[in-house]
Length: 93
Image (cartoon, rainbow, N blue to C red):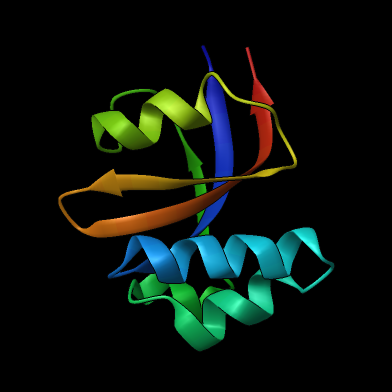
């Protein structure tokens, strides 16, 4: 069974999401930015969502987590909650 672990930063605007992605790509700490900016309760844990399987998250989120490259910041990913910057920390197939 496929299981992934990811962390994310949830913000209200695409612009803010792109700005945070750029900061991370330039060396800023993902967890620190999540604590400062994320509108999700997981922000206090550095954005960590723990382990989950396909179907446990919204479709747009699953699409990224179970298909894209591990260890990179992906986004902006728009869901009904806002814009996410998603980092897949691990995935087992």
